[in-house]
Image (spheres, rainbow, N blue to C red):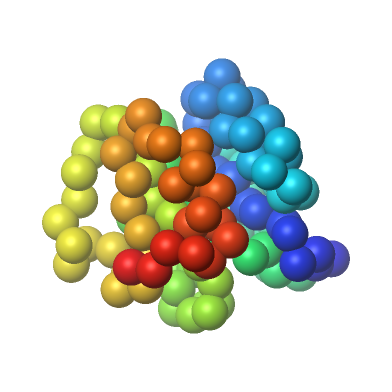
Length: 121
């Protein structure tokens, strides 16, 4: 259930989810959408092996994209993790060493480059 161009997008705001999915799709990625940490983990547990996971830090309902990033990093250490937020700027030690953080609004080209592995932490 993997393609070299899959990206797992985790975002609870429907408009942001669809806008970001469209951006990544236009860049040639196949986007798998999740609006909760549980949906994201279920997709990964079912065998999805994306080149990157892009996750909002504030996922509503007390869900935490930082905790998701730490879990993904522990279970799939080679997966590119990109965290995004418009309301929260985490300290560097709060997220995995190889993960990237972008403040919303972020540059579209930077997000695509991060998913392609062209930007390193």
